[in-house]
Length: 334
Ligand code: CP
Ligand code: NVA
Image (cartoon, rainbow, N blue to C red; front, side, top):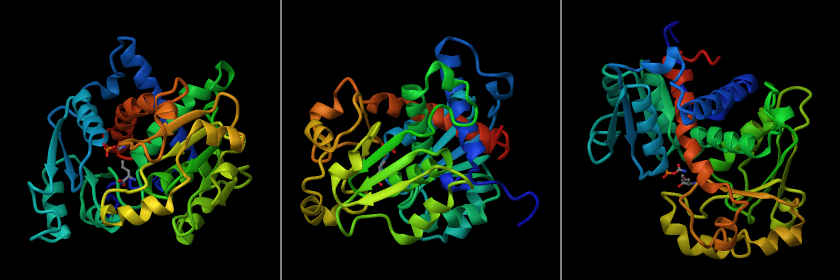
């Protein structure tokens, strides 16, 4: 690679633990600053003025599209949303050619793709930073928002100031449902932050071995990180501070719907499940959205202890921090 090769953000695995906490802290700082009426810091204020950021999406999106477009606008850049209906994204033109062409005219590419190889291929041939806006393997912008949300929910006055762990170390997260893209980056983040994770998925829907290896290899030397995998939801939620799930049928899996609904029977997150399994008193619920009732009851989803809408809003602040780190500061995350 040339010394001028851009740094891409395709997965939480691309970050050191210190960079991950820096991005979460920066997201938190920008959120509280702007919400209390202060301007963005000088290095960010007009940082994308006269710059265009391409958002190439091959799948539907509410949160990722809005948060990334809004984040570009906050930095005074121009977001250029391009769906696969609009441009040639590996259809009728090779990904290589498309990537070279798009990157010759914009400052960064935010890409939502099907197979992870598509976003990796885009990055390989792009002369500007590529940010993964969801692939079948990873969803790093979601993970940043999720740990920002946990930081807000769990950091105490003492731990808020702890630059190293942001009050996240030692928390226990239980994932109940499909082991998917959202979980993979969440678990890699857990390994980097010292967050314990337990995953309950039906047989055949657990973490693939290569991803498990990546998760465990993400824990720094001497870390207390643990990962527990089971097929029993009650076992996963034991002592959980946070219970998380996602759809059982990710985009692109629509044809497996009937089979999946059957396989995941008994995996709905309910108050009763949390009680039976022994989740911690005052446990919180998270979900990246979009949500369906089969994976979580209304009672949990709309409860006072549910963090889902705060988590969705935090996508904006995560996107601002990611653009700051990878586009404005060109991959120097400080
Ligand atoms: N959570 C999330 O990525 O949602 P969208 O698919 O609406 O972007
Ligand atoms: N796992 C879901 C996440 C959507 C934000 C999907 O890939 O469709």
